[in-house]
Image (cartoon, rainbow, N blue to C red; front, side, top):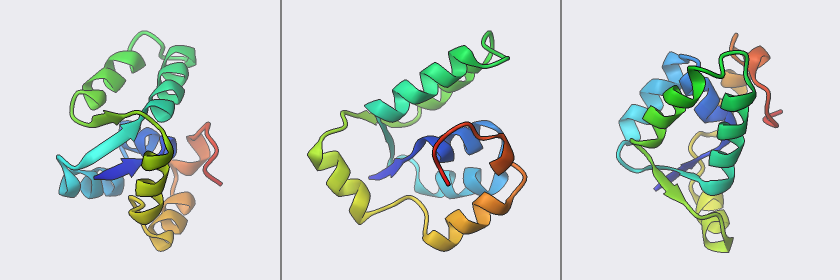
Length: 105
């Protein structure tokens, strides 16, 4: 199971094609944890597009597993991060990185 962080999900929801391809290649073994879901829900509701973003998020949530975040989840994430450090560095340089409102730097 691949556990995604908030920044990766936001990039996907914002249309990052490279992230989308990576995620599609790992379906159905994709999950987010309950903390990430909380951050995403808050961001969707607080966004300028609060009437449409919660629905977009709901569609994403329907295709991934939601895991309770506990010690076991933290251990699994640390052993199998969704992207390599090279992928993350490349992602940070792309045009979507400026739009993210999360702790990914």
